[in-house]
Image (cartoon, rainbow, N blue to C red):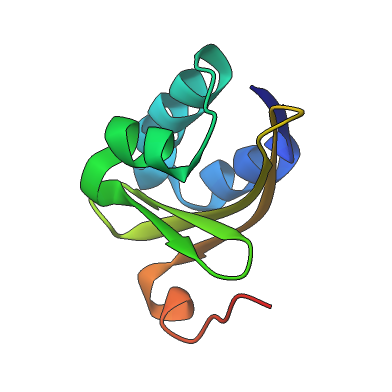
Length: 96
């Protein structure tokens, strides 16, 4: 898949170095894998992935202490990182 918003990931990593290993793993898996549906994402990421309607894909990073929120266009294989949040901020977040 093609990743957009990598600069957001890098900026978040600078502010939250404890999330670096998890973000690296997520980025590597996403870039090397073809996902055709949310079911493919669930198979790959298991309990660390949720779909939040109407269009948000939420990944737990660093054992659930951080969340990466993305939009995914399966036909074009583009993943757009929209937000990265710590657990406290995620609790107040809404998918719009």
